[in-house]
Image 1 (cartoon, one colour):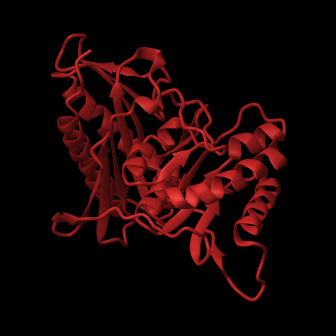
Image 2 (cartoon, rainbow, N blue to C red; image 1 turned 90 degrees about the horizontal axis):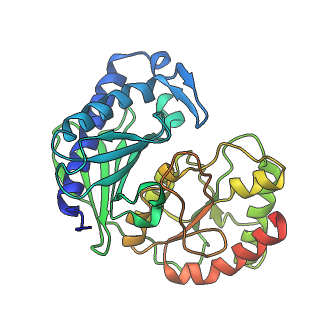
Image 3 (tube, rainbow, N blue to C red; image 1 turned 180 degrees about the horizontal axis):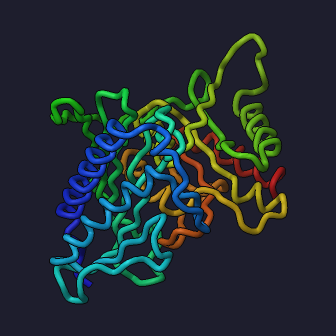
Length: 332
């Protein structure tokens, strides 16, 4: 199979996400908050709110237009789990699969508390065998609150590094944005979080976090605030915080915690939530599973994913053994 035209793909995805951002921003400014946060439907994957439905329509319209010249499969939260085919086989360049989370961080955005992110990743189409590790192009765009004046877009092509830009939402003008993860080899005086958003497993997750920090810092200094936690309910946003040097470490072990508690099916991070891990990796971060193994999963909307993201290799070298051993001890 010939290679994907990754440069064109990256450009198209950035344009698509910019259109989604503009339309969503206009919608939020013209409607009451109660309209954004109303429940539209409950699905196996997650609850779909009014703000999600607004973006889905824009995404499908763009894909229909794109399908006139290109054959691809769209896989996204909120649509048929098997994906939607656009275009006809043989149309355009090599076929690909496009994994999308139209709004990652819906709950924060729909209450106008914190920005969400639009996440997309494209991989050569290998049918049901296509996996996260196959992603060659990834793009993510910040979906701002009504109070924001700027929005970031981050993207990467496999082996080509990561790029960013910050757009002025008033003028539409972008300027370069450097992706510079922290180079600190310790968590001390930095942000580090273990995802603990929702009911279910909170006590167990808190014990795990305390154990990791105790070992990483050599104990607890009760007279100092040495590590800070930021519960950003947005996996893509968590990765962005690490890429941009704001956080040093993020760990999400909810699938393992729920399994330990006897729950065979639960709502956790899904592949579409972590589809932009390629950007973090190209920026120099270490993204892996909680045991330090390469992170991978099917390109679907149902698989639960546990992951860790470290700002740099030195920090990962220090923390991976600690995280692995404490996860095995408490959740094994």
